[in-house]
Image (cartoon, rainbow, N blue to C red; front, side, top):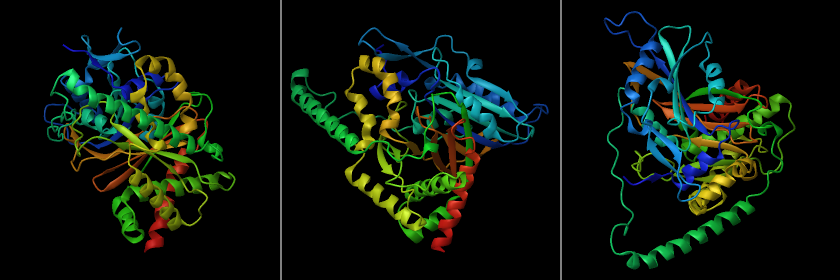
Length: 447
C-alpha cells in the first residue's frame, strides 16, 4: 500500500502545534434529549450518547487514522491506521454541575490532543439536567478543516449527508509518460512560483499590526487558558438586514463582528478605535461542491479584510465590509495576503518541521483576528434520537491573539462560537452580548 503523506498544509498545521499552543478546531453541539428507549433504564441521556459514540467511532475509517513521521522525504509525516485503536481514549463522559455548557467547554479546548493517537476527541457533557446534554468535538486541524470535520462528526450521528461525490482527477493526471507530462509540470511549477511571489508581495503590502486594540492581543501561549462563549441569532433578522442594506449574508455576519468589537471595546473603556482597523483572516474553502468531495484534510485559502471599527455608523460599516469583500472576491481566493495558506505548498517538508514553531509565532504579523464561517447542510442531526438543537463552531486560537470567531447556520439560526485567551479576555460573555446589540441596531436601521 502506498504511503499517504500529509498534504503540505496539513503538515504545516501539525508542525505548528506546541504543548502550550493546541491546533485543534471544535464544535459544541447542544442536544434536546429524546425519551429513553424501552428497556434502557432511566440513565442520563448523556450516558446513552457516550455509549453510542463509543460504539460507532470504530467503524469510521477517518477516525482511526493517526500521524507518524516518515524517513523520506525528510521532515514528512504520513497517515496510518492505529492498530490498537481504543474508543475509550477518544470518547469521554464529563459530568459537570455547570449549567452553562460554554463554561465546561473552555478548559477542554485548552487541552491539546494526544499526538500519539488519532487526533480527535468527543466530550459528552452531562450537566444537572438529565434530559439534555452537549457534545464537544475536537479535531486537529491537520485532520480536517471545518467541512471535513463536519463530515467526520456526521458519520457518528443517526442521520448523515448522502455519499460524497467521487474525487475528480486532475486533467492529464493519468495520461502520458513522464516525458510527455514534463512541459506541463514545468509550467505548473513556474506558475506556482509566480503565485507564491505574488502572495508574498500582497502580505508585505497588507501592513504591519499597527493600531490593533490591545484587547485583541495575548501574552505567552497557553498562559491564560481558554474561555468559550456562544450566541444564537435569528437568521430571518440577518436576512432582513441583507435585503434592506445589500450585500451577502456573510457580509452581514462579518459586519456584526466589527460592530460588536467596537461596542465591546467601548464598554471596557478602551480608547476609541482609530485607523484602518484590525486585519481579519476570512478562510475560504477550496472544496468543489457543497459536500466537499475531496475527502478529509484541509482545502483552504483565505481573504484578508480590515474590520472598520473606527466607523461609528452601522450601515456604513456594512458598506465598507461589503466593498472589501467584493474586492477580495474579484481577485479570487488564490491571490492576496489572505491566501497565505497556499504558500505551504511551496515549502519542503523539512522546512515545515524546522520552521513550524516560527510560523506559529508569526501569525500575529499576518492577521489580527480569525473570523471563519462553516456552512452546515439543511439536515436535522440527531444522536440516539436526541436532536441537535444548537451547533457552535470553535476555531483554533493563533499564538499572540486573544480571540477567534466562528459562525455557522443551522435550522434557521445563526450560531457564533467565540474562543478567547482567558487572561486577555475575561469578559467574553460581554462580547457575545455586544453581537446581539449590534444585530438589533442594524435591524432598526433597515426597518
